[in-house]
Length: 111
Length: 107
Image (cartoon, rainbow over all chains, first blue to last red; front, top):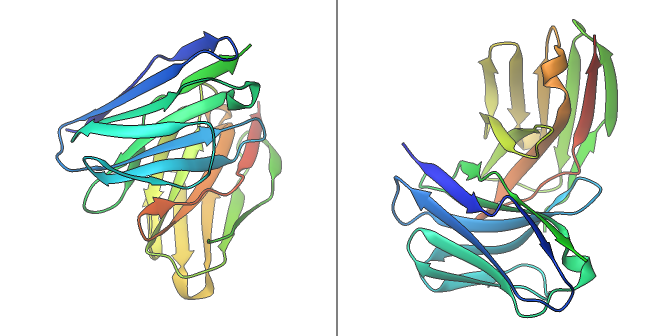
């Protein structure tokens, strides 16, 4: 069966520091991969999605970037964090039937 | 992009009560999912329902794609049903989330 791993679960970083969040999927090949952010106030905002290695689509201009170095690995990065980057980051995958499944999320606090 | 509206935004129920959550969306969609976000933040898949009706225990969902809405029914609510319920229609490759319905079930 398919599983999705996301780490770390929580992270406290100072303003101006770099960021790297990693997400990996097991048990499937060529998944669609997504990064979402949930700020206070509940709604989830799509940040990036990828339909294949090296193929990244950005939904919202921001201080973040994404990369997909391997088929089942999706990385969210920043060179210099801002206070406004704080939030709950969720990685997700979907297969051919397009039902999406989410990881457990990373709660990022920028101080 | 597609607009998603969920109602009500907040709902308080006594344990054992029934409820209906609504999701309206502004454009044609390929499919739609309902999620429950638990207190730890994890999104739990409830239904993948492009159209028609599905049932899973005390929960059921109906999507009428031609009229651009979906409904989530919770019957005989329990305290463990508390949390935020999201609908997320899919347009092309991505899911767009509504702001959710926050449900509190009191004993």
